Image 1 (tube, rainbow, N blue to C red):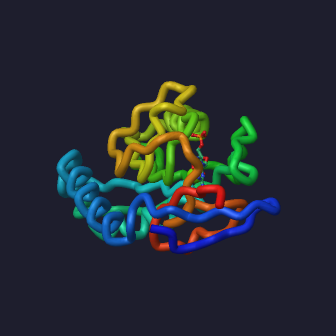
Image 2: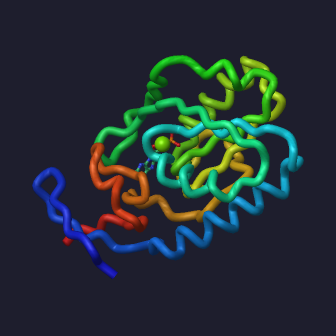
Image 3: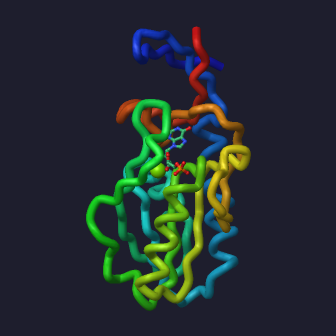
Length: 184
Ligand code: 5GP
Ligand code: MG
């Protein structure tokens, strides 16, 4: 199903829905229950939201968590347009509350794995009680770094996707579905 036509760098694309808003809501609810099952009911967990991409996913996911949950965020940047720049830029420093606590990283998508690999390394340096990763999307065929997400919403191919928080050069994060850009 095509809902949107977008023009990017003078080319026209149709956005083909991969996951509808309803499918996303249903999967995120189930994922929250999978996460609940892996933690003790009364032990606090700090959710570390990777901005900006994971913001919609995290907002929906957190509502389904049953342990005492804290929220922190960190901004990482690696993409320019539809291609990775190969370097990861972390804005600011890690929140102090990660030390001594269970940390659940919430990410929009794992592509090469570079961003999450770097982030996990940095988090381990501040001595959390545990570090786990929840990602809405995973592109296993694109991995170049050793990363194993503990909780994965959907596995997808290598194509660039947008919507539900994922951007095209900073835009289209508002689309309620996840879609693939197909040249028109
Ligand atoms: P990695 O470091 O794993 O190569 O890339 C991770 C980051 O690149 C993601 O957190 C996301 O912000 C961005 N990214 C990777 N693949 C896509 C994609 O298909 N669409 C969008 N919008 N962003 C992506
Ligand atoms: Mg991201």
